[in-house]
Every structure is written in structure tokens, then in C-alpha cells.
Image 1 (cartoon, chains in turn yellow, orange):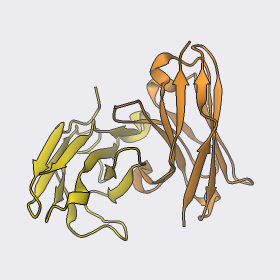
Image 2 (image 1 turned 90 degrees about the vertical axis):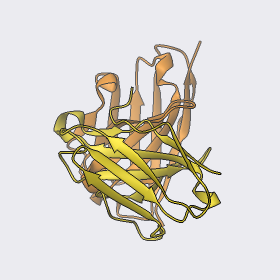
Image 3 (image 1 turned 30 degrees about the horizontal axis):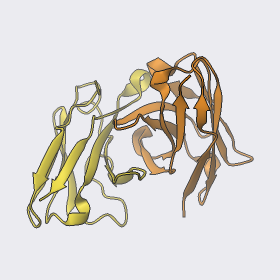
Length: 111
Length: 118
């Protein structure tokens, strides 16, 4: 069982928006502004999409955005495109003992 | 361009040992913390271990403490993971990752598969 809870799957049609949630505790997501999101296509390495809750690395489309409220972080993908179909994982710093925790992953299907 | 190239994976028997390596290039290796993350077949990502830029501080997930040892050689731009007392549940693709903000990874290697089986 993963430390952070994500929905197993979400889906949307091209052009629509979807939001993926990531629920933790005050010891990880709620306690630090160090939440990141990764996109992983089958057989590939994860790719950083969002860091520090809301920031986008260079080259990531602005269709991807992040937010946080309390112990829950969210990734929103607007204007869905076929190439967005992938697994998405959240990740959070969790303090000097547990250190880093991941969510169980969410499979995004573009209908 | 940041590049991370893992090696050393393979088939090992339960109770055996394996040493993974990661060759880094495209950035000042000695200035960045580094980590290992693994992914069991068909499963999610699991943080394994991290090491500070200078190699002084090391951190491990509970299930790896006492069995795995992370190290680095800044003169050779190489990160390593020594894995002992391997179990079937350690079977996974092991990724080397450059650490960014808040000890979370930004760049990842392509991974090396470790299979623990008799």
C-alpha cells in the first residue's frame, strides 16, 4: 500500500480537462511544499511534470498545472491530447525519517 | 543534456548480492544529491535510497535499511547501490535519479532490471 493515495484511473475526451488527486497526511503532502508529479509512458522512465506543488519545468506544456489544499495535492491537465495517455505519479518529501513517498499511480485514458 | 545510465542489473538468487552503478553526465555531479527509485513489474514507484552531494549523508527506505548501501564517487561521476540479502520482492527496475527540490527527483535514467529468483 502506497503512502500517498491516488485514484487508480481517470479518463477524459480530447480537449477536456481532468484532475488527479493525491492524498497524504500532515507529515508529507500537508507539511511541505515539495510535491512533484511524474508522467510515465509504458516501458519508459518517469518524466517530471510539476515540482514544488505548482511549478513546471522548462518544456512542459502549460496545460499541466498543480495545486494543493491541506493534505491533498492535485494535478490538472487541460485540453487533453492523445499523447497525455500515461500513468501519473505524485511524490512528496516526508521529513527526515520517512524521507520521500510516492503515490500508487493513476492511469489516464484519453477516450 | 543530463544523462543517467544504469548498469549491473540481472538475475540473482534469493539471499544473493548485486551492485548497481549509474554513470552521470551533462551536469555537475558533485553538486547534486542523488537517489535510487524502483518499480516492481506492473507496480508503482517506490523510493529506495538517497545520498547527499558530498556523500556524507545517506538515507534509506525502512525495508532496505541494513541490506542496501548507497555510495558515490564524485571523481568518476558515478552513483552505486550495493544490494545484499536480496529477496523475491526486491525484483524491480531500479532507476537512478538526480535529486531536485525537496529531495524529489527531476531527471531519471532508463533503469536496470533486477530479478531475484531461484
